[in-house]
Each structure stands twice: as C-alpha cells, then as structure tokens.
Length: 202
Image (cartoon, rainbow, N blue to C red; front, side, top):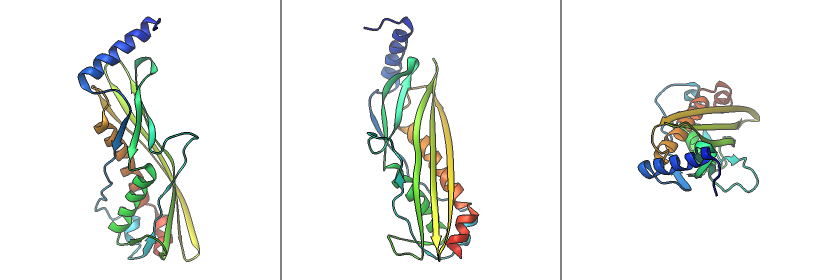
C-alpha cells in the first residue's frame, strides 16, 4: 500500500506519461553502428598495417546481466524498467574502433596482425534524471585501450558523457541515440590519439 502522497502522485504521473507516450518495462536498445568521419586525424598516418582487435573486455558488477546498462526512472526514484543494449558494450566499442582503423587505411584481422589493439570497457551506463515536465537521458562511457607493435606499447583512457532531453517517455530511440553519441565521442578520441597512432604506424 502506498502511504506517501508524494509517492502516490509520482506513481500516477508515471502511469499517465507512460500511457500517453510509451510503455514501461524492461527494454533492449539497439545502438546504431559507428560511422567514421572523413577527418584526417592522427590515425590517418598509420598506413596499411594489419591490426588484430579482439573483442573488448567489460568490467561489470557481480550479477549484472550481459548488456545491462541501467534503468529508466520517474519522480520519486520509481523504476520504469531496466535497460540493456545490443550488441554488447564490448562489441559496440570494439566495432567502432575497428571501423576507424579501416577508415585510416589499416587492415583489421582476427589475429596474428603486425599490431594489436586490446581494450577494456570500464563504463557503459545510462540513467534518467527526471522533473515534472521532462526526462534527461544521460549516458556515461569509459574505455582503456593498449596498442602494441614491434615491442612498443601505449595505453590510453577515453571517457565520454552524453545527454539528451525528452518531454515524453524515454523510449528506445532516444536511449540508443545518446549511447551512440557517446560511442562516437570515444571513437573521435581514439582517432586523434597521437600516442596510439605512433605505436601503430612505426
């Protein structure tokens, strides 16, 4: 039984908004693939090197389901359902970095390349900050990558925070767009990383 008037009002508001603009409950969001730009950043100088890029590892808490990145909430901190992504975060980010390497002229190979890129996704999460009139959908990402070639190595950490606002229920489209923007930002940082490019291009 709901005793708090504020909590009751939040529940009623959530029900009204959900009924008008979307459906509450757990959701799996498809994050669009990253498309490299035509900018000639540091990575463009590495040449046609063969680079092996295994799937990136993911740091997740005990009991966290694969692909689970957060949940949508409404007033009163009431959950409207868990959010997962497809592909998995490690695949999403690794594929983005592979596409940047190909755009820079490298050849991405399954294994045994002249160089390797290993990565760990340290953070890939979303949350909703809500008021009586809108939701802010906020994505937070962080990744660490290590490039190795000819006995040399370089490690870099990238972070990206992204946000979009909606005045209707935060559905799959806006969540996917926010996480896609974060992945694009991570890829931009990777593309412009002179230390990583130096190791790959030596």
